[in-house]
Amino acid sequence: MLSYQHAYHAGNFADVHKHLTLYAVIDHLLRKKSSVTYIDTHAGRGRYPLQAKETSRLAEYRHGAEKLWQARQTLQADPLLEDWLAGLASAQQHQPATRLDHYPGSPWWMAQRLRAQDSLQLFELHPGEHGHLSQQELPVRARHRHADGLSGLLSGLPVKSPRLCVLVDPSYERKSEYAEVADTLLEAMRKARHAIMLVWYPLLPAEHYMTLLEALKAGGQRKIWRSELSLGTVGREGGMHGSGMLVINPPWGLEQRLADAMHRLTPLWGDASHYRADWWVPE
Ligand code: SAM
Image (cartoon, rainbow, N blue to C red):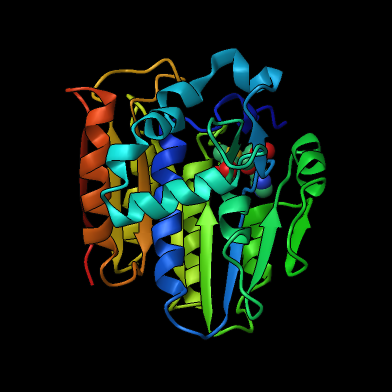
């Protein structure tokens, strides 16, 4: 039974960390002409109106994307943040954007940068969320399916394009999802050895995410880079005190680009917040 709806959390600090990492990876992929298949295993709705009753209830975006929006004049000194903020501006309903009225989810960040040679596959299992997603205007090369993203990913591999980029962003409503994600990633990497895979996980006091990290290491996967933004305090967002991303096969230069951006951003969340990135498993 799925109950999680991302609309309640859209644009929070974890979305900023996740989508900035995703954006930076896509930016590297676009430096070469060869085609890319993007797969979003847990797509959500696509683009979130901030005035919707779900999103305005907790208004987590005020502690996330809106902080960046308000500080955009100074943040634009960093090239990655400048581009990301321009992307955020272009996702707004009212143009030219002077205020935030929408927050774009992962399908939007991927679809926005799709070229003629690329394709996008979106999976969303929640019927209501998939209903919202299917109403989004997406490029013709984007396909969305009302199906399980983990088995959908495996059944579609290997892909025809020379390059593959996957985002796995579950809601972790069940503790067993951490192990299921690890098993899926290990099998997916056997089928697509050069794929870039991004996985989001919440930093929670119980540290269940360590099941995922340890299983990937134990499974023999190499080249796993880890990026974590910690607020240093237990937040109201389900006790989540931070956001983690793993990137398997990160593009060269990603680490430095993101570090520059994140070191500028992190002080927005107060003195207790900090950012760290390292190799969870090296080459
Ligand atoms: N990736 C989205 C973004 O960044 O904008 C947010 C995704 S949200 C954290 C997780 C989504 O996965 C929810 O919409 C949930 O309904 C969906 N979901 C849960 N289990 C799933 C599964 N097995 N396959 C596909 N989607 C699933």
